[in-house]
Image (tube, rainbow over all chains, first blue to last red; front, side, top):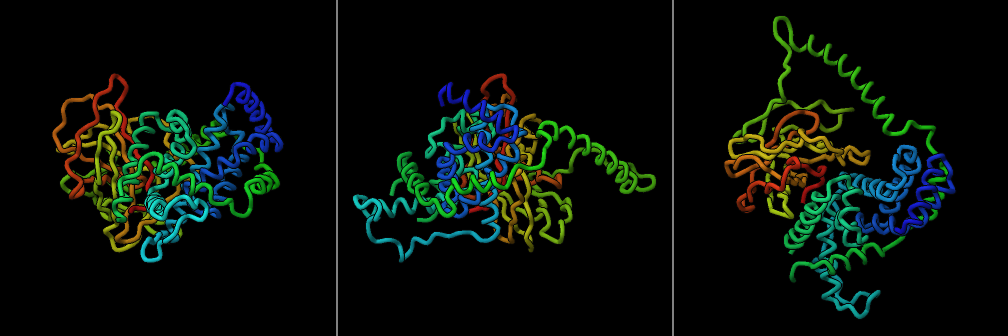
Length: 186
Length: 252
């Protein structure tokens, strides 16, 4: 984010804190797609991702007067979204655990969206995704923030309210959990 | 198949994120949120914290006066010591759980759980562990919030204690809600520790979990097949030792 954008955002945050809906919309709109993709990647289900996004935006709009530092808006909003995803996953785990069966009905052909990708690669990706679905919410979140959003560790640490060293070790632990989940399903 | 590299993880997440959006579209969600209007004029969080602490103090003092008279009984002093804990050999203490709310599952007590350390690895100057707590009781129970965590030596002496640390806790956010654990099911927790500069401890180390709400300590022993625990985190300098945990999540 450039300095000019940061100053612009800071001014919008101040107006949004004073209950200006246009200012809030101007702040959130450029971030909507990224937020949606983050929720979709963590939850793996578009309806759940939509619910988490709505929950996060509602909390952000209602809780904005409590944000002390306008420059922290981006990390603050992402933190709320990650928490909304965590809540959605816990709610889902109480209903039932989703199992992805890669048994006899596994896809036998190439990915229709990427015809140049062979069936083995598609199968490998599906296996990896099934392993990812077995991870805890915090593990999913840190992998998504790092690998999908491409956020640096310092930013991830701010989003998760943890020291940078802890973010680094949690990222390492999440990768190990993913590898363990992948091995356990083979 | 070999283990995934960063590019494979990124490709999988890209493919996963590209699904959707479902209905409604994100822009419609934003319009809905704004149409619902803001919450009633609210007190900023840091002011609300002060009010909450003041109210909590009044309630706590009142409850303390009430309980000290009720529990101590004639001629018996009220217990004012630290929370009761079990020895590592005992594995779990027998403190009763808090009563459930509205007839729901009980909060998990240390006697209902068996905890194991699945791995304990060095990472970037830290030690990182995965802990699995399995409900060995006959009924479902709830695990709420983050437990306090302690790194213990072979004699059960506390080397690092999360309750000694003044720091923001991620699980204090509103998104953290209790996890229900059915009999035979398990919940997972990540623990990381760093910067132990004390005297060399007796090995192997273990991890103690003080469950939120019932002040009982559960000792997580290394799981069979997990290998030996890789000791304490290295001393990195004058900053305090740190140990922290994630919240509970469904086990796997």
